[in-house]
Length: 631
Image 1 (spheres, rainbow, N blue to C red):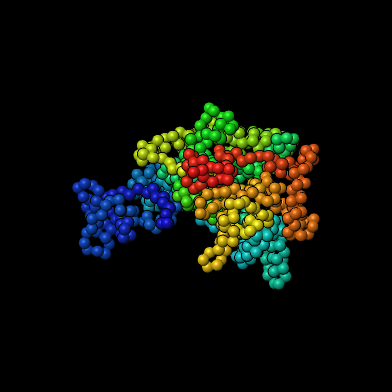
Image 2: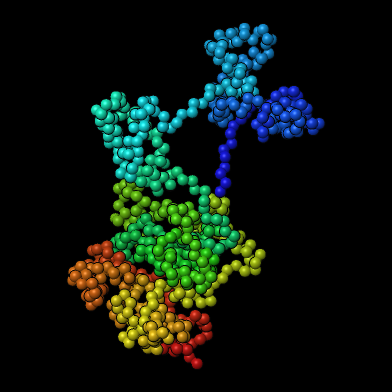
């Protein structure tokens, strides 16, 4: 990037006269103006030391002393009314002196000096500056060029104090100023014992020297680089302009600043997590995923699914009939941060199948994800009007009891969220668009249709698209089935592939997709038939159990038994958990949260069927009880 130079201020006036000496701008040499062209824009000059004449624009001629003038002109807006009045007063003095004859100048200078209580030397200095620059601003006092670190003390002591400030204060340990000042004074006292004769500076003097260090430098050297970047780094960058809707979608997660309650006892179960996708061109919210589980690959996959799927069933489920949510279809690019959940191999491979590319924002440049971050900030402000809000920090919360005031279940909050999206956010004027996101979407989509004849692409089969987005593991198929999460899964559909090997003798691996929220079953992809088959766990206790719940139980059993692999103890714990009486569920937040996880179904427009899924699905095909196609 080319470095841009600042524009220096020069308000001097050049009087153009034939025979007068000037400074030629390009050569920076003195010259004499010999003649002026007929159009009055150019002049013929004779540069000092050269015998020939040269034609140059008159705008290239400067006053001969202008280059050496050390006067620094301020910006006009910096001048106060008082300063303007003083300039006019001095300008009138100089003009009166210039109008005098040769013998009257001395008398007039003495007269004005007495009237305005200044010395004669001062008036002569004003006159000299004005003749040099032809600028009334030359009457201002020259600005003092002072360094940020200029100290009025012994130069050797200055250097010593500077080094000690760097040693004690500008370090990641972040010592308080009072401690730094005492140490510096102690070190100066020790120096005096060694033969130096330094005067120990006062506490206030050293503190002022520390305060003169720029705050951004203090933050950086005291180990607060992130704070320095947020406060002082320019952020002209943002995500580049895109051409059409669904060209780029930004996705991110956030924990919600509200406590939710369970559906039975209406007691708080903690926060939910929200994953949101926003269309960069129109700022329309393209999709979302709300869950009690922490953000994961599944959250990303389900949010992408919600983006592509029609929202009609979502609106119908929540009985929202007076609004529309027209965003659906395959996007061209997904822009995210660099989190591990966004860099999952299966997501990038699945998206590549559907011509979707992933793009990751530059490291430590969050402004490139500003579209989705702004939605989160707007949503956080709206949530502050709901019962059970936790606010952003304890300072804002003060004495508000979020646990006691929590009142909304996960389903109730989701209805509020969808209503806010389609009725308020999509219809409010966006500051960067100068219109509402819905208006922008309608305008741009109609423009694309008119110019290209098409607008969006959609998967041929949404059921296949859903299963493709689930995370998967590769396993060999043995006689007892396959092992995942430490437990066995089996169905007769696996029989054909038991102990299958490659031509090189190695065991063949097969893909099994799974839902982290329910590991009671998995999905087997049959590479021969190109179908998905639902494979249930041989341990029925796993039905409705999430991966995170299983890990918690495994850790709990390990702490009790001291064994890493005690599958039966874990299953017993699950069985015991499922048989907890309702009154004991009401006693603990964790138990209520786990119970709510088992009850809550994902709020998707489409629930995956239990029948096998083909890559190319034909709704006219009939299946028998085994999942095979009827001939």
